[in-house]
Amino acid sequence: ARTIGQRGVQLIATVHGRTLPELINCRERANLVGGQTTVTLSGPEAERRQDKRKSVQKRVREPVFDCALELHSRSRWIWHPNVQTAVDYYFEGEIVDAEELTAGRATAVAAIPGQGTFEYCVPCGRGSTCPAHSQQRDVGETGGAARAPSGMVHSTRASTSP
Image 1 (cartoon, rainbow, N blue to C red):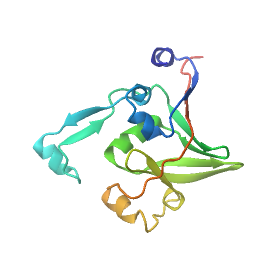
Image 2 (cartoon, rainbow, N blue to C red; image 1 turned 90 degrees about the vertical axis):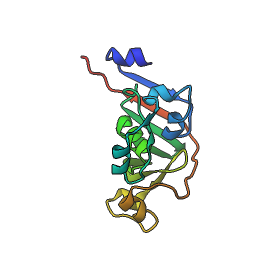
Image 3 (cartoon, rainbow, N blue to C red; image 1 turned 60 degrees about the vertical axis):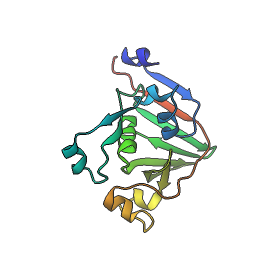
Image 4 (spheres, rainbow, N blue to C red; image 1 turned 90 degrees about the horizontal axis):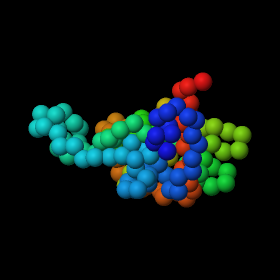
């Protein structure tokens, strides 16, 4: 899939996984979304971070796919329009924008990183922060109860050649 995408060929694929973070954390499939590596930061660089961590996860390369669609049920999907941004924000523990798609409706949601998954919140996706996530948005911390939805992740790569 990587070499096909690099040649500019339009590619649509189904990856067996429940969510985008599940693919990120799956050794066999992580390369499709850019892979991951552990990076050790210098003391001053770690001090500048809010969480003060010296060891952080980073994306290794460009994802094979530009966007991803999580199938949570027959009638509920989550659209990640930019896989690269979603993966980077997931590693940083930052909230990223996504869309919840249901029959005839697209709703902005916030994808909030949790333990191995994203929690999706509609009020936070509308620009206002709900009480449950106000501290996360202000401080940039994650945690909270993360759900593990069912489904598959479908991804596409836009063609760059005619």
